[in-house]
Length: 343
Image (cartoon, rainbow, N blue to C red):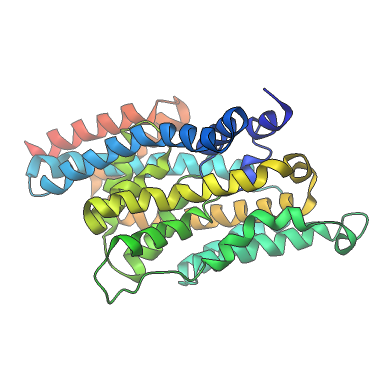
């Protein structure tokens, strides 16, 4: 593996661009081995199996919503998902909270979430503010350094920040594509940050789905291999059927293909860029704050009685203390929910 591939594999560069890290690493290796054809083939082969599985499960979910046993299984899974999201929150927090600027950035994003402030603007704004604060201490002064490369991958995000669908119209594939394309360009920190954007866009703003359906989407995603971002396939299907499933998947993963291709020639310089590192620290801190907000919102939907609360606490102990795989916990939660409510 060459130096550029090592830079991606150790997380020093693929963390600097939005999107799922495992997918970006796969895309990068494909590009290094076979150019743009390898980039497309490697990324597609990595994403496609999980997408097809989630797509099929979305179809089954839609046709079984009125089956009591299915609802009982999901009733048991949702509290488990809260514990899994808390684990992701903890893991992100250990990386994101580095110093006073990142702590303040995280608090700022949390306040922005609960006050209804645009989460994309908050994420980018906090990233830029932390970037500038950290760059001020660099030598020579940051305005004299060649910093263009440090922010190059992030320009596309600014052009898409306001491309949200019109809530008054019927949802179609193009609207779904634009929604997830925007999210794909700002998905930093953890795959679970996706939930914060979906909570704000499709639930709070447009009321296209409910928090229960979002939790169901995460539950389905936990049962399949591949990146959590394939949850977008499930949401897309619920919003606009088969075309929505395709549009959401293409939209959320397209930025990874594009940005890996753009960043590839500048790997070494990006690793040394104080601006890029500062921006990443800021958006990671902001991502943590957004995740705290969405975890609270989803917890209200999932923890509805004593049984669900106990199940969530037990699952939290299992993931934090015993490191039990989340797939087994989701399956166990489904079984317990079935026996508690379905029989």
